Structures are given as structure tokens and as C-alpha cells.
Picture 1: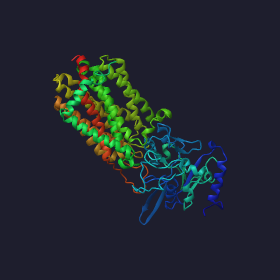
Picture 2: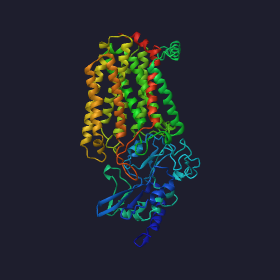
Picture 3: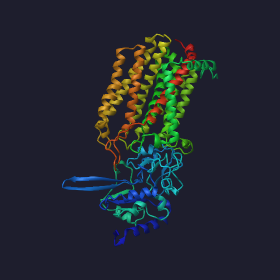
Length: 238
Length: 385
């Protein structure tokens, strides 16, 4: 198991999470750190996320970008997992005409599936391509039986079954929400728990004792497209 | 206020027109438009019944496609009709007045057709009430909805005033300014998207207004040319304002189109490579074929038939240009993973094309039926010409 100061990182993050949940919501600030040196490009986070949120074809809350780098014989692979950046200054929320997407007190940018009109303006506005439109596709195509794919996903309290195109989340925008339904129950995000390389870290960045706060305060940190002024809350460690 | 015979055709004339149409005396454009409406509305019904997954080719890489193009295209034509009405009354009152009711009627119809297309694009059109229950004043799309409503009311008032021969300068000026605000807001809807270099520009609201003047001018020129021929009016005298509007519209569109392309090509920000990818099309088609060629066509002749053809040419080329603008913003994926292409190509589905056909046919059928039922003769007979 991955260690930090001699302790298992999952145990550290779990205790960080429990401590954070004891605080009022507005005093928390959820953040994620991804150590690119540890990411092995296994896509376990992607598939874990898909099973957690029952995402349909073409919708990936956490894809992993693969790049070949260098010139032969000095070549290698580089991986860049991309969850929603949960920006502190998001570009997606101001453009929503009906306030269906908004930033919570704890910094998570969520979508109210009951309000979303499916205009896709937020998808156009997000500079990270982190939002998707659920048009109503199924992995099982036109098969009559779609038992697994129409189950409640657990997202946003688990009240949404993909029964038809008149039932949310079909017709809505969708995005990563840091598995907030798990986090509020005291469980780490699915991508954190499935990460084989122990490369994903999650916690409350407002907590000076939290592992994530210690990791992101080092100099080897960058934020993706930070120059856009979106203030992303996903930190990449190099 | 009298409804039948003033704002809509009289029952008798409408029945007589429908009888003529049933007897096969409607003319080819009407029957073609009726066929287009039937097929188009079948497609709209299919989109609502089957859902986007089975009917629409937009996806996460190209979230806005031909339906948004159609919306923008028609809403700009509507704005252009309001502009033509305004400048017609201001600068060419005698020459323009016989066409005023037709122009504003088209403005209303094209605005309605735009909404038809938009309705098929929204994922959950049934939740539009959230614009009132849960508004977001920071969103250009919210303001678009507000101003669109005001605009529709303003042009309907203008239409009522024209048809009842009580034309009010206050309403005309109001409609003009609301049109400017509404459709520059539509430009800002795209122009404010900082994540897409192809859209992000303070020039876009101005670009939309200039294009509106051009496309509205083109549609009204077609209608004016046909009316002049049908009613054997003095073509040189009555078509002069429309020729001038088209020339000015082409000049303004060329100016703003050139600078948008040139500044885009000079850019080195993330995503500005789209301008280079689309440069040949933007310059050869967008500026050359769509703007310079019709300008030269107007120099060749100004007869009614040629003006109608030039207007049609502008409308067709501008439709492609609108699609190039909307889809161009999505050519380069923001985050390329898995099997995403380096350059995204989008082809609209048959259903999307039929939504466009439905919108065109709707405007065409309503105009031709009202024209045949003599709706615009009332205003004409009260006119000065």
C-alpha cells in the first residue's frame, strides 16, 4: 500500500474525510491531487467512475489522456487524468440560464437534474471539456432489457433512473461531482479508491492537517489551464 | 381592434384561398413548402418522440449543430426585417411603404420559425418555465430569453400599427432598439465563451447585427422583387431601397468578416488554430463567394428577377456561413482522449436537416397563404404608392 510518512495513504485520507465532515459545509473545500508520476494509465479510475455513476456511452466523468513523449529511443508514455476541476471561479455556472448548475458552499460544482433544460451552454463554456450531454444512448443499444443501465446511479441522492428521454438525467448536462453522494456518507471518491497506483488524493484543502493540503503546498504542483483564471481545485503533482 | 381582414386574412378569403390550393391553383412554391412542412414536422415529432439519441448527430464534441445554426439564421433574418423596416421608413418612406406589412410579417414568422428549431435542440424543452422560476441574470442566454420576448411583442405591435394604418414612430424606434439589444445579446452568447477562441470576441455582437441586416435585406429584397413583378409596380423606383440595403449589408458584413478572420489568424491563444484550419473556407467562401460575388451580381443588373436571384443566393450562402460559424467553434476538441479525432467533423442527421426544412417551409407557407388571401393588400391600399 502507498505510504505517506509511514502511514497508509487511504487511512490518512479516510481520517481526513471524517474530520472534514464534522465541520460545517461552508468551512470545507474539497480538492483533488493527482500525482502524474504515479499514474500508470490503467483507467481504473475511469471504469470505477463509470460503474459508480452508471454513465452511458460517450460520457466519461474522468477520462485519462494518454500521450507518447520523446523521440526514439528515448520515448515514454504520459498520462493525464481529468476529472471536473471543480473550479473556484467556474465558467460553466454563470452561463446557465436557469441556475441549474451552481457551486456549493464546499466548492463542488453540481447540476440540479430537475432544473436543467439541456441547452448545453455549460458544455460549450467549460474549457476542460468536463461536461457532457446525456442524449439517451445505452451500451446495450436497442436491446429491450437494460436492467443495469437504467438503475439508480446514486448520483445526487440516487433519485434518477434513465428510463426514457423524458426522465433525467437523459436530456441534461452531466459532469463529475467528486462523488459527493459518497463523500457525504464518509466514503472517498470512487476514483480515489480504485486508483491502482495510489496517484489520486482527495480531501479538505481548508484543513491544514489534511494530506492533500500538505501535498499541494509543495513546489511540484500545477493546475491545468490555470491561466484562464478558473482557479481549478484539481492539482497535478509532477 | 379588428382581427380578421386586418391582422389575419378574412374568413371568406382564407376559405377561398384554401379551396384554390385544394384545386391545385396554389403554385409550385406553395406545394413544395407544404410538402416541406409535412416532412419537417414529421422530423420534429420524431425528435420529441424518439429522443436525441436516435435522431440528432450532435454530441459532446459538437454540442451545437444545425438546429442552433437554423435558430441563429432565422432570428438574424427576423432582426434584419426589423432593420429594413426601420431604415425603409426613415430614408425611403414612399418607396418602402407598400412592402412594410410584408416585411414585418416576415420578421414575426422568421422569429417563430427560429423558436421551432431551438425547441427541437433543447434537451428538456418542457422545463423552459425555469427561465421565470429560476433565472440567472449572469447568463447571456437568460437575457436572450428576456429580450427575445420583448422583441416579439415589439414587432407584433409594429405589425398591428402597419396593418391598421396607425404607424407609430415610437413603436418603430422601440422595435429597432430592442432588435439591436436582443440580437447583440445573441452575439454575446457566443462571444462571451472564453474557452472557445473561435467565438470569444467583442466583435461578435456587432458581427451578428451586420449579418442580420444583410440576411434580412436579402429576404425582403426577394419578397419586394416578387411583389413588384406581381403587382406591376415601377421596379426601378420601388426596389432602389432594397438594392441599397443589400449593398450596405454586404459591405458591413465584408468589413466585420474580414477583421474577424484576420484577427483570428493572427491569434496564438489556445484554440485559435481553428482560424487557420478554416482559413481557406472563410476567405474563399465566407468572404469571396458569400459577400463579394453577390456585390458584383448587384452591379450586373438590378431588375426584379435578378434582385430576387441575388437575394436567394445571399440567403443560401449565408446559411452555410452561419453553420461554419457555429460548428467551427468545436473543430478542435478541448481535451482529446480515446478515439477523439484531432479535427472534429460534423455532419447533420436527416432529422436535423428536416428541422431546417420545416422552418423554411413554415415561413414560406404562411407568407404565401396570407399573400394569396390578400392580407397585405389592405395595407397596400392604404399606402402612398
